[in-house]
Image 1 (cartoon, each protein chain N blue to C red):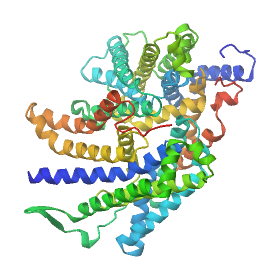
Image 2 (image 1 turned 180 degrees about the horizontal axis):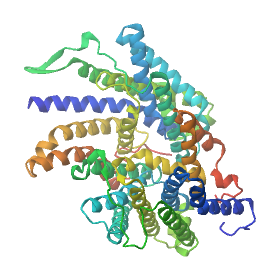
Image 3 (image 1 turned 60 degrees about the vertical axis):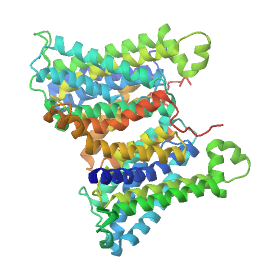
Image 4 (image 1 turned 90 degrees about the vertical axis):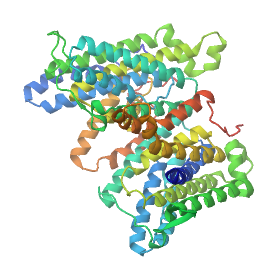
Length: 305
Length: 317
């Protein structure tokens, strides 16, 4: 039971982290109609920036803030130099061009930071376990990831649903040409949205960094997960992304920790321990396939045109 | 689209390319350059895979981001049978073809319910599932892959361990596949599939069950790619989950787009250029992808018809 609560929280934490990544992706997708595979590279760059700046300033928070700023600027630069020329093109062109960007960023990182990974040490004031229920302890760091992600999710909700910028974002998602015709500077809006998405990806990357190592290619697997999430949630829908992210986080984490035992009850123990990792990795893809077959537009399709 | 003067720049370029490919083993034999032969064997196999992807992507408008799955399925069919002691190519290859066709049928039947970017993503998801299944098969090497100790045995008909014979087998299969695709796209069936790419609703309105046509096309492409997978497994004497990884599907897409979507010989150009470029750049610098990446971006931005487009093919849409 203790293990279950802990894994439940781990799943929630992973899901919320995925939400940060998926939120940026779905914003860019929903508003610019742009498939950005390089979003995972921004996640990776965020983690590398954070590790570098944290070593440089000697403070986790200082490094994190600098990394957020740096990735925001990187995102804006990327949008300005390359991606804005791709708006209105075929999705396939986006896939290809941003696939090229992934190769570029991976090699850039190898060139600058070397092939070995970096580590971002946990700040000392977050290394202790917290008692969350009587007798149940949980890592303070993971707990703080949950809190930060929830705060960011709340911030996004307010930003998108309650502010003027959010209104423009929603208007842009439902009809790009129209808000342009109404005299809104959509170039600036798109650039800011892209920068925001980049900063969210960096936040996910730098928060995940102390748990895993910072390494080349770290953005790719998680990017695919983020895509699965926005497809399950319905492209362009922040709410859908949130629900799908938590769902995917829970299914993935719980599957990995409990499926081996579950399978052992029906299979021989060796067969179970070999099949379980494969099946648990497949679970979320299975979920996506089922969702798409039943609802080809995702669970919460953003209303269109 | 298909009927052009053989003497156009494009016709000549294709003829020269085919001639050079046909004569490559002679060059390799004369100069003792075995490396060129190995490199181009690999290129021909990838060209076959890319040509099959082009059938659905270029002609059918079905943007599969999971096409490398069939490379793996074909490869594993050969690898697993070889591992279990069945070395006969007369068993291995039909099994590889049947299994990839079956997978394509299932994947296609489900994926074709969606459109656009959802289709890209669901095909990707299926390929990732295949990847994880392969990585989980502990009996067949799991993550580390499966070494094939003996190439497919065709009872003296053809010896796959002979580099030159193997090269020509790949070459002939590639030409056969391109001819098959040529016949398909110019048939009534192919016209319906291409019509569905341009305007699916209209095709349905005039009475074509486009889903069935597209699914058949999808299965043909998957099967052709499965053959490429069987060749690839024989070529490397090894098969691992990595040949199904999503970046491999990305490579195949790059080849198709680089060569020119919906062009018969485009994927061959694309495979040659991409793999030779990789080879050259990696000799020039260890960090070759830092050049290749932006190059892809520039190709997308400025060379829309791919290589075949630059050779003067009028894009048809």
